[in-house]
Amino acid sequence: MADFWRAVILGVIEGLTEFLPVSSTGHMLLAMPELDIDPQKDPWPAFLYFIQIGAIVAVVVYFWRRLWRQTFSPPKGGIGNHVIIKLIVGMIPAAVIGIPLNDLADQHLGTQVPVAVTLILGAVVMILIERVYRREDGPKIEDVTLKQAFLIGVAQCVSIIPGTSRSMATIMGGMMVGLPAATAAEFSFYLAIPTIFGAGLLGVIKDWASLSSSGMELLAVGFVVSFLVAWVVVASFMRYIQTRSLYPFAVYRVLLGITVLAYWWFSR
Image (tube, rainbow, N blue to C red; front, side, top):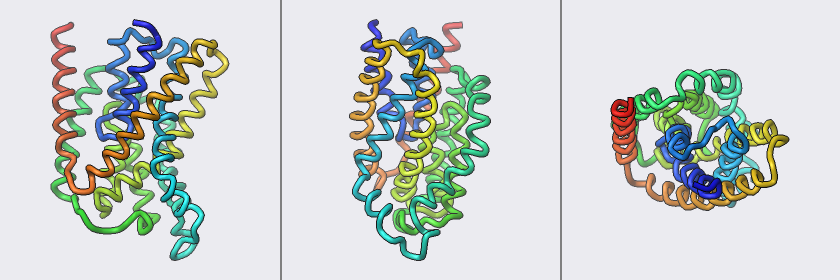
């Protein structure tokens, strides 16, 4: 298979899975061996970071009116209630806990069996939290407190375990601290902007010097595909979560986990 089509496929996977509670990292870890991709060989290290930036740009584009209003309008209740302050507070746990442990988790848990088990366990957690904490009405994004933002940031740290899903961790964390599902999803997407963009930019900078011109072309292809697919996914998911549960995503996680375990078992 040509690298162009590998770039397209990975861009689609990133766009589809980054903001759904199904684990984009888990899908990448499972897909790359099947595509005969060595994630340590150029241009793929930079590519995987760059397509994350493409996906997060889709979030900015989708929410830009609300982001603009919430960023530049005077916040009710003082500066401590500003959305930027809330996002900074939400990022603190990832900076203190997540970043130092991220590489360690990838090294020891970033293989098929641990990812499959995590997909299944994450589905169980989703179902339990849905049943106990699901609510349709409640605080809007403007009403999220600093304490809630911090606790959602703590929940985000769980996503360093491959197969968990950053989106799942933050949405579930938001629901557990009293937010309706739609508000939890919106805050999850907001928190992804500095988190994913920052991590992606650092990763690209680290590997940029080793990129060839053909590698840069692949980055451009993956970026565009990831951006377009993620834009559709974010818009669809925000409409979906207003009134419907996350059970179908839990079922998908279980089925995928079982499939991966079966594939591993029979290919030994």
